[in-house]
Amino acid sequence: MTRSLPSAAPDELGLSAGQLERISAALRHEVEQRRVPGASALVARRGKVAYFETFGVRDPAAAQPMAKDAIFRIYSMTKPIVSVAAMMLFEEGRFLLSDSLAKYIPGFAGVKVGVERDGRLELVPAARDITIQDIFCHTSGLTYGFRGNSLVQKLYQELGTQMLGMSSAQFVAALAKLPLLHQPGSRWEYSHATDVLGRLVEIWSDMPLGEFLRQRIFKPLGMSDTGFHVPEAQLSRIAQPFPKDPDTGAPVQLLDLRQKPSFEWGGGGLASTTLDYARFSQMLLGNGTLDGERILGRKTLEYMTADHLNALPGSFDLLVPGYGFGLGFTVRLYTGVASTPGSIGQYSWGGIAGTTFWVDPAEQLYAVMMIQAPHARVHMRALFRDMVYAAIAD
Image (cartoon, rainbow, N blue to C red; front, side, top):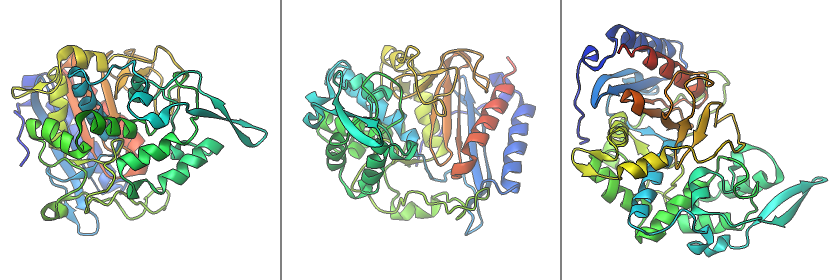
């Protein structure tokens, strides 16, 4: 069972109990309006949990109440975990961030960039090699198929239909044969880069990604319910979405967690619980340690959560104004500019099915919200963040 975290009354942690109750009312309203089947939310400050509540049902088909130990598909919230894993190996001297990706995966040598001219795709040489730092920062020139319908992205869409039947080595080898969407280092483009990083973790550690994560992160941190599939005895704990999106009517299909996948998807394959991800977040807030277990050094974590883009252009539906990007996290650059409150140095990410987390070192605060409702995620993330910051009393 996942180890618990210490808790305290909100007022002992400088938080308003009344405002936290307003969070409950707002999330309960989202459930009552059938925007989401259920939700789980946790807020911690100064090393202690002030708020941990659940709402609605875990599975709309069974009408079972949402439980605090419900297991959620966290999709891209896998990325910060895999990025931490890779930087653990960085601390062991396994690679330099300035190294060429092709040094470890030779298929990326001589990669080409796809340029559309008159409706045709032309391939031009990359101006420079993809570096390991590019892979962390999504500046490699790789993309995701679902991010658009350019000729290059259509090639990624075709590969994406096959990826879950491949091993990570097979998928990354196939990915290396595709053209890049942009020149390496020229812009921020959300991509399969963290899938490549997961493969690099396997190469550097000489073990499967899931095993490395289990041995080096999940077991030390007491994250016993996090992994690339859910054991049979725990299947009844999986949180499920509505079968159809309540806003669009489109079918909702999420990852099948019942079988161990052939491809341990470093960019989005993990399942976890609210408390497990809170323990990961507390480790981050604790400068890389939790309960005496050191995962990363303080300066390594500071480096990961600094901006590495230096005003590089990007896709601003995901990398919103006011934010840059570090090694696996989006990083807040200004107190203002963004459409939600926050502090300079806050870092975060989320998953496409609705999960979200952020860590705010300036306020000694972190928060986690878990839902399984892809279309509702943008509204509910902003709502949750607005209301958590309103709870800070001192």
